[in-house]
Image 1 (cartoon, helix red, strand yellow):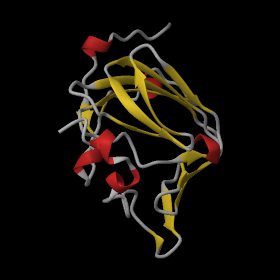
Image 2 (tube, helix red, strand yellow):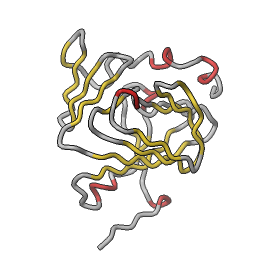
Image 3 (cartoon, one colour):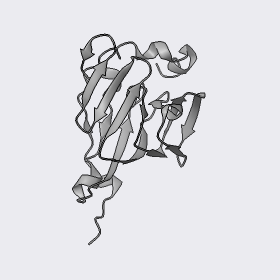
Image 4 (tube, one colour):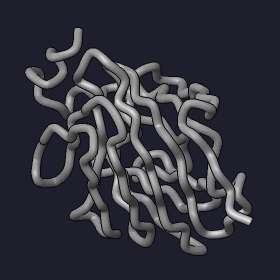
Length: 169
């Protein structure tokens, strides 16, 4: 039997990030709710002035974003560009597909986030030099060894052009 969900019925909760600008809202993990083993599906609600996650690239997982409403700025190795409702962005595995979203607008950016889940993935964080071994969530920093997920991410805005960050006050 298929599992059916409607966006208006999904409860969104803040993730509880220790750095406020990363505290985006997520739906329940829809793939897990439906009993999927390898499919990860989330609906994310990125409030104005918030970042999605630390800038990162997956070595094994692939990711797909579809912007459902609103807009955000996408950061990638190619630079910065606005993504709008009804746009799809696909990130194959590899450092050249690093990514991060920032909501520069006045309304929430709601997007579908679909990921593959191989048995193991390594995530690189170019801004901080960390690596994360998934699904164990073992995070290591080149300087201090084992560390927390948000370690070193306090100055995320330093990696973004001031004119993009000033769009949302």
